[in-house]
Image 1 (cartoon, rainbow, N blue to C red):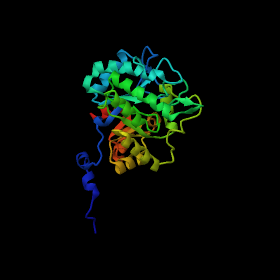
Image 2: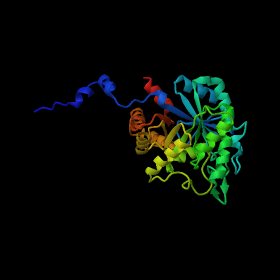
Image 3: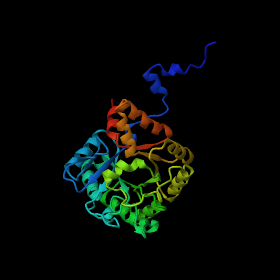
Image 4: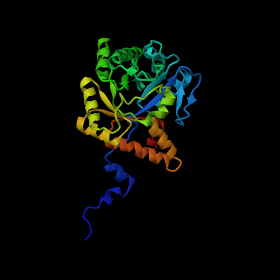
Amino acid sequence: MFPRSRFRRLRKSRKFRDLVSESHLDVGDLVYPVFVDENLKEKKEIEEMPGQYTYPIGAELLKLTEEVVDLKIPAIILFGVPSYKDPFGTSAYMKEGVVQKAIKEIKGVSGEDLILIGDLCLCEYTDHGHCGILKNGKVDNDETLKVYGKIAVSLAEAGIDMIAPSGMMDGMVMAIRDALDREGFSEIPIMSYATKYSTVLYTPFRYAAQSAPKFGDRSSYQMDIRNSDEAIREARADIEEGADIVMVKPSFLDIIYRIKKELQFPTATYCVSGEYVMLKCSAKFLDEKRNVMEYHICRKRAGADIIITYYAKELAKWLAE
């Protein structure tokens, strides 16, 4: 007896497969990370991340902006490398800080065509490389929150469209929301790095952003790789504090799935530098286009609404084919 249900009926052509596909990856889902370094005179390839660059403020950054807009990528997230670092990360909230200047320049070119997201942390701006203010050799959570509020207001004054706090301090969303609202920026949304794990997968980024800690590691404030229930508690707390979007970093499929299913909230994920490098290295043995497409579609299938990825430009081109 032959089967009544033949799953292959709806797999027999590309049009049939597209008609019934459950998950869709679209250029509108993508965010491109951009590194801006005020110490540079011309763009520089990141040795640890082949095909990725750090940009000086100026013509090359604006050319990149125009390329991103032309590809219809809706947003970029900015990371800054300042010329001055100190124990308190004061460059992060200077009126003429590296990201603040970049925001003003990019806005002059992109207008409303591009959402500018400002990563908010201290690791790139402190001379010790940790994500907060140190006290007796440890990060002081509550003192750090005061500085995060200053940075948020500074980015808002420069014209940022969204703020993405990544430092994993307890109460950071509430502190930033209060600071923004107090200064008249209640319309600026917060995309919180709600579940950011402590992992080796950030290593290439730390070279690019010059943000590696000078001593110890970040395991006392970033999440333990072994935990998933804790991720739900972290994300729920950020939602209660006023986050508009929660993020999973790195793009762990089980965590994306749980957060989207259990919390039913706008969910972003970050395919981090280590994931990018693994995909690049595998291109020697696998079809890069197909591998990268499959990788990112799986993040959508797990429940991600937004994908921050170093492959955003390539994906935009492939999706347009």
